[in-house]
Length: 219
Ligand code: AMP
Image 1 (cartoon, helix red, strand yellow):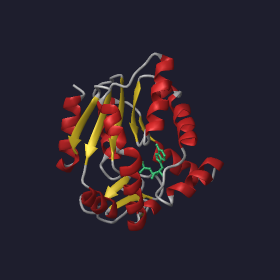
Image 2 (cartoon, rainbow, N blue to C red):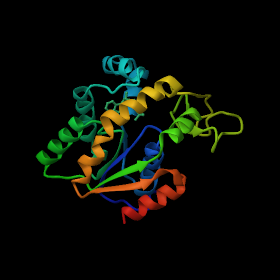
Image 3 (spheres, rainbow, N blue to C red):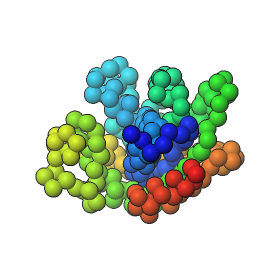
Image 4 (spheres, rainbow, N blue to C red):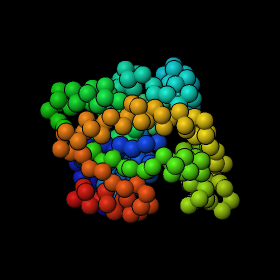
């Protein structure tokens, strides 16, 4: 049972490792709004060895962005699903100005708009530290951090499967992902500041404090 069901369309912006996924998960638990992670959808395609997964995997393992056209098509298809009709939390989309413009057009056609764009700010050194300690369940993709919430037996607390490091969380790829973030995604801050929906949150506060701030922003 969710605390309350609220209709909201939220974009979470921020560097890789800034806590977008964690916060989207908490918001889903509290508000019942689906958490849509384009990275996670791509990883599922890779797991299932689909054609999209094969294409996306090439970019992901180089720390680059999957081309806008493939990403937008996949995302807009997901947004048409029944569970998104009352809103959603976008984690990892948009990541380029092109994607943001495509999202604006998508909403305009439906006579809808985004409610809030929340940017989680974390310095690069902290991103590198956090991602270095990040582990995911090899089966259900639950995420852990070896510094904060390492399970005693290093097995997933949800399904008891071994934890692994995401391939694109290796130090060289993280560096490339940060370069991509600063070049391609950071310009979205300026883009959304103009919309009047933009709010920035200090991501260094720790997951529960960041969540409190976000809940306050969402009223
Ligand atoms: P994430 O799980 O959000 O860290 O995303 C992992 C990887 O998936 C990224 O480094 C990109 O290669 C790819 N990806 C996820 N979302 C997008 C997007 N919106 N546009 C392009 N590539 C993406």
